[in-house]
Image (tube, rainbow, N blue to C red):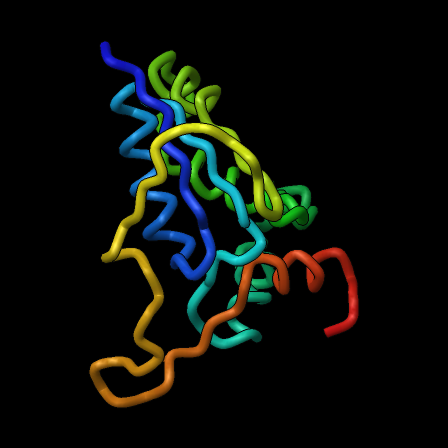
Length: 151
């Protein structure tokens, strides 16, 4: 197996599409280092994004009537890392090893490796096909909201 180290600048990329590309590279056996994690974008309205991450809709009730919520990280680099790890087969050795090859940094990083770009994951067009403005929120803004910070 030929292990390469890829470096990705997450600025301006859509979170889900970027995470799927990273997961594919990790499963191929490569190391991936991602920087500027707080500048990745999540598309949608601010209220719907916060509702998803705060798990307002995903509460389940068991027979004991205790409400259970799913845990999400609150740091910007942890949100990106968690999104990628959820796309890997976490319970199999292959997925566990792939997750260990991922490094995520907040802010610019001085890392060596081949800088790679994914044009289809870049959020370059603010207008959708229907002509409406695409709303987006950065992972850094989401992180501040989850930690209870002001807008």
